[in-house]
Image 1 (cartoon, rainbow, N blue to C red):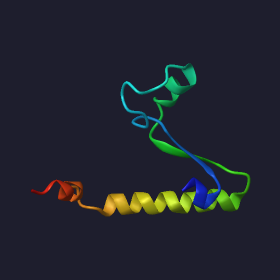
Image 2: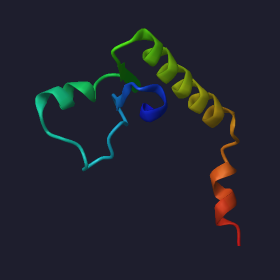
Image 3: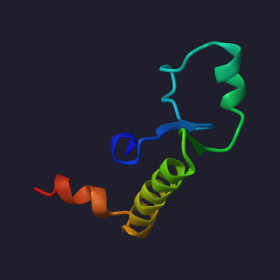
Length: 76
């Protein structure tokens, strides 16, 4: 998505780092108190808007998929 949009994208907030894998600095700790969100940084508004579009497409696709969908790969 970063390559397609030209923007830097970071996932931040609760749940953005697996337990035991996180950093211990103060900035990271305060970030974990925030709601889960994406931080988009770019040098033009066009790049930010393209990144937002790509992120929204993924969120819509995932939220529309049935919860059992990942289990399809586990069928015997």
